Length: 193
Length: 193
DNA sequence: ACCGTATGCCAACAGGTGTTGACATGCAAT
DNA sequence: ATTGCATGTCAACACCTGTTGGCATACGGT
Image 1 (cartoon, rainbow over the protein chains, first blue to last red):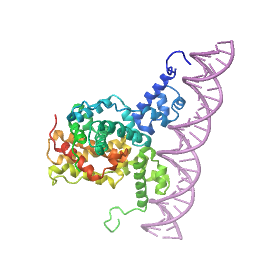
Image 2: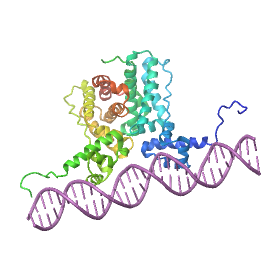
Image 3: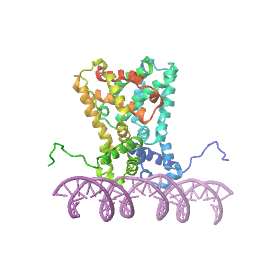
Image 4: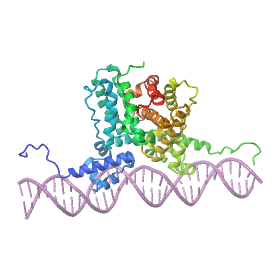
């Protein structure tokens, strides 16, 4: 029993753990799940490959730790309903440009079932929850969230993975102007059924 | 000189070549580029792995042959301008549901640079050309095509790769109703700039 | 019948993979 | 000072990968 109230005192290996995680995110984002080898990640982190195993158990475990991702969606209740689309695109673009975790997850989701499941969870839970906060037809909430995900992930896929020139070259503000109305309709538009 | 006009007489190995290609498309679509091994493809095609090398040179060569893909975009000039969006979504959905080549290309593009480049080519050339047929501002044509690609590929990504439940469960007709207006605006809408 | 070639299988190579265990070293508490 | 544990290194295992060359067989033209 330690005398103080420190719940878990920081371990000496925390720096190593963090550098492994950082290198893993970079490699997973750049190369995808299978091409990102534990040896390469360990070399980037300047430690031995066996340390990765000790601290994260397996490659799957390392990925699970490296691909922890929170959309950090803001509270949408104070947002004027007519600006929901714009707020969302802008948030997503800003969230991704500075964090390669989403790119890593996106690349890995194409080939790794666990990554795909995590991606499903993120967009099913976090995004659907956000969409549900403003009161639309509950039966349609999941579908609206799915449609938003399809455009948002399509934007990410073409911009960060395929690097489609017209999407890469368009400045963020202009992308927002084009795409915001799409999300707006998916979120608050009347069902076409 | 053969007497008839047959330009290149069919070789006996054409059946083998075709079965290799079919198995390759299945494996690439199901597993992605790196997980789809030549040995597994050869086993599916019930031939020896070395035959794959003889006929396609390398794994890259096999993929290049298996991922040959034509969007088969119809001539858009007779289409009423107000229905362009609907025609396009409907065409894409129909084109994909019966052909796994696009899924193979989509999966591989996440990790294989060659596949990504091919994907860029397909959407830059074929789709941009189709968009250019009806006379919009040429300076905006590429951007409009890119935006269409972002929504179309996002739909494919969420439906066939990530298998996001709300997108998978929504019947095609309803997807068309939701997404057609998006493409319509990307194609013919006024620039928000 | 013969011969050149196409088609196919087998065995192996060289290299890379995730993963494991044994062994050294350092730190911290007794 | 000594014990115990955390941290790190090294070497190796077992397996899988793309790829290659040699050898058998069957076909098609002469």
